[in-house]
Structures are given as structure tokens and as C-alpha cells.
Image 1 (cartoon, rainbow, N blue to C red):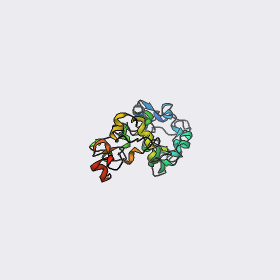
Image 2 (cartoon, rainbow, N blue to C red):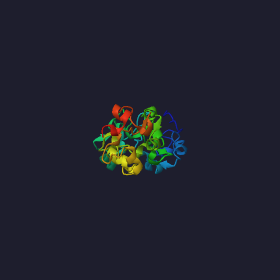
Image 3 (cartoon, helix red, strand yellow):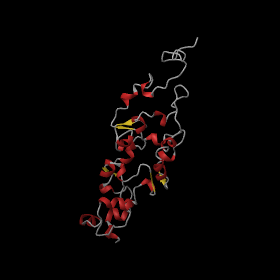
Image 4 (tube, helix red, strand yellow):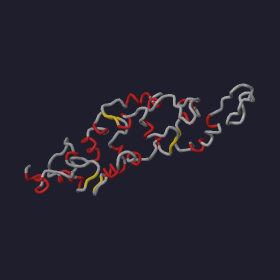
Length: 228
């Protein structure tokens, strides 16, 4: 005799035909309906189109995806993939592959409480991979402490360190090099066009004004006028 399935009836008892059931109506996945009730829900989940990403049949206990890694995401987000092909890419994307998380390292594929389906909010997501203590010090850059994305693109950029633009341009968005107080602090030297990060740490420092740990002894002991 044909053994009943885990859902109680054999194919013969159902008239010899297998009837399709919605994934979220099945005995296995029904509890997910509650789990997916979050502020941001991925469109295929919201529309209950599970098979946009998953194959219906496969090995028991396996997550049967239509494609491997980020390539599955690019099935719909092809325009994003094109934008990521820049000189400097976030390591999470660069290392994407069958054994690497790729997009899923930062994004939840089903639902999230955070915009963009992010797994964590704000800098907490960045610090999941980047050790927070490396960006902490006696003096911390206020912008860096608030949101890494103020200066960095989370995916790819034409600038080193996936910056949103040249380092000096980013600094001067907030710090006007012609502001009298700033001019005085630099002994009347015009810092426009210079790379601020050559002297100042962009994240944190043990010294005032985020001055880097190491500097020319003459400047440290006698100041700029000693030479200029």
C-alpha cells in the first residue's frame, strides 16, 4: 500500500493528482507568515512568489535557490550589478560566490525592520564585520560615529576605500577651508585643495582635532611658523 505523505493523504486518496499548495499555506512554512510581518518586506515575499527565488522541489532540508549567491539577486536587480562594476568594491561583494554571502551578508532576502532590507540599522551593520574598536579613540569624528555611509558607498566606488568622492572634497562638505576659525587654526595657511586626511584621522584619534598619532616633530613642538 502507498504510504501517506507527511501531510496525511496519499496521491491516490487525492484522486491520483498532486495539487499545488502555496508555500506559506503548507504545514512547513505557514509560521513564516508572522515572521515576515515587518516594516519592509521583499516584493516576492509580499506577493507570495516564493518560486521567484526558490525551486519548489529538491533535497529535503536544503534551501533550494534558483541561482547561487548574488547572481540570484541580479536576476531582478541587473541595473545594480552594472553599478557595482567599479574600480573599488566592498569586500562583501567582491568575495561573493557559492561559499560567500554576497548580498545576503547585509540584506535579509525576506523581510526586515530596516529600510533596504538591511539586517541591522546604521553603523551596527558595518561593525558586524569591521571591528568597532578600530574606529574608536579619545576623540571620535562625529560624522563617522553617526553614519559610515556619510562618506562611504556600501557597494562600490571609483575612489579608494569606497569613498563617495575624493577625500578632500568630502571633508570640505562640512568644513569650509575659508572659515576664519579654521584659517587661524592652520596659521593662516590656505588648506583648500589639500588632503585633510594627511594630517587628520578620518575616524578617531587619541589627540585633539583628530590629529594623527605621528607628525613632523618640528610641527608638533614649534608649530607651522617654525618653517613656513
